Length: 237
Image (tube, rainbow, N blue to C red):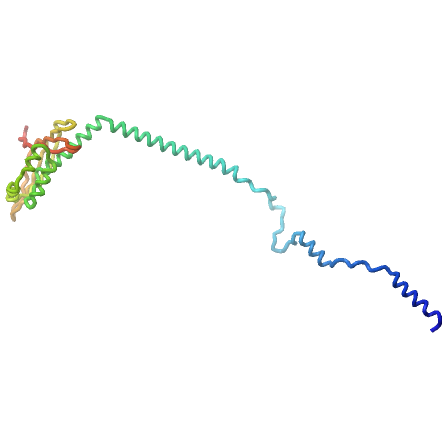
């Protein structure tokens, strides 16, 4: 090697020292791409429908409070109207009932009907007896009577009841016609036509029917018509 060889080596070392430092490496492209994808919407896929020109534009849904409020108001008005009609109907019914209840003609008609119905039943009871249970028959007579007639029935002795039993009669009374001839708030007179059927007690005998007319004096006791007197009336009077 000659004397000039060291000089080029020196220059090479100085050139390497004079080169500027390498710029910093850029951030990885993968990180930048991932951060950008966070802010952007995902790309559409084949399953997602694509918007077309025929699709209507998206609009805000109308509020339901504005339509529901008038509907509730109309419902409340109907309810109030129906309630008012119900109250009016009840008031009219009460006034009609009170007017009919205070009608003197209606009250007298009800009194007359009760006298006929209860008086008829009392006369039928007084014309019925079963010798097999005379005590029950006498007790029924006492229940439909009042006044002197009631006292006489209560005073019947066991001997009197035995006489009825010895007759061996089964009598059943039925009123076929009845009419009131007098009527007050407490008393009434009832004319009745009665058929009394006497059943046969002996084998082979037939039942007999007796027809009588009675004048029945009635008295109203505790709201119920009782028989005070029962007298036979001749036919034709």
